[in-house]
Length: 529
Image (cartoon, rainbow, N blue to C red):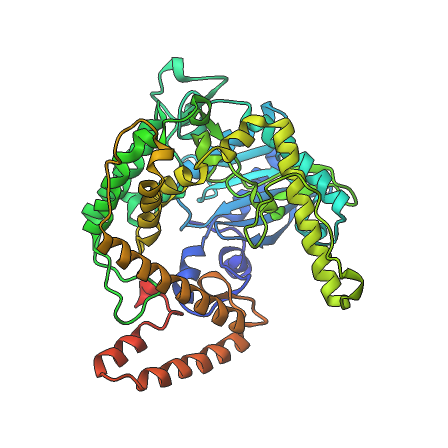
């Protein structure tokens, strides 16, 4: 494939340059390396906006799934071009579904960028660029992340009200099927009676259905007519994946005596999950309707007019899917407290009684906590007042228990099934309230299983805290990512901490324990070891 102009000049467009990885870097860079025809992209972008030529192209962002460019035309007009990485799944469906989702959202007056051109396939016959892409409007706004930390409580309250209004509009629409949204031409063979306003519901782009080896498998990814078939498909995907690709696997975080998880253990838990599906769904019909929600609504995905609280765009609808309403319901992620606390009433929070005696740093912390409390309270108040069905959905008895067990069943097994087991144990313990009148719970866990689970859960919690502490010391994020500026210091800290770990292992009573401790240093790439 021709990459247009000088290959060396375009190399920075093709590779990841926004940071480093402390471990597994070679693989992660390979996952994000994408060549495409730069000249073809510029030509298509100019034609899409009725301009003569694109005179400048600049890489402006690289996220977890996409690379983003700003293209400037001869008259200064700018557009955004976004490319999913080769590792972003599902190929075709993620791009095609986002295009349809954006178009649908425009029909219900949600502020999203206009799409000028796109290609969801890489066929050279139809896509001269040679990679999936979307060319879209560059909205005249700035990320909310820039101003959110310094906003007053009143300004944050206004943002909360705007977000609730957007959720009201999106939640007001119930779709005919569960899955993800597409333009009708992207899902050929769809019966005419399932087409609505040029849209159809097709296979889900929920990433859990496409994780790792699941991408190449023939699985039931929808669309589904009922909430029950949606929930059953989750078990089907997990069970088939375990049957055909499952291997004994240790958790990423473990003690030397922690045993591996075998595929059959995961299958057995999913079989238990299948048995409680009817009772999970025994709730008000409105909570099982097919609904849509933004998959990751954080301040970085919200654009506001500079100097105001007016929202001019909600971006990054990639991987949005249509699910039973009760699975989507809950406090918007950007308003959740860091400590997970949720107010039990609409009582206005107050500053500490000894506020005047606090130091400047303590006052700053108290002020921020107050703003967080007020913003969350405002979000809950506006939701209760304006989107009552949403409020009722996530405040109903055991709403989290129902939601959590489905989410854990959908999660791929990465050597740890403790979260799924914990969710199922909660179902058993709260059975009489979750399914009154359904008779005895169809699943059970022995005292021995519960004791072992409690032990493993305690180990996992301790190890997670340990890893979080070390990550903070090294200044690394998820999967070992670190800024270019912090890389050298992170490497030095990593070697120092690993040497302490090694010294501790040398004191082990047996050679076997020592070797295992050295092998299971947590900051490593599991796929490369």
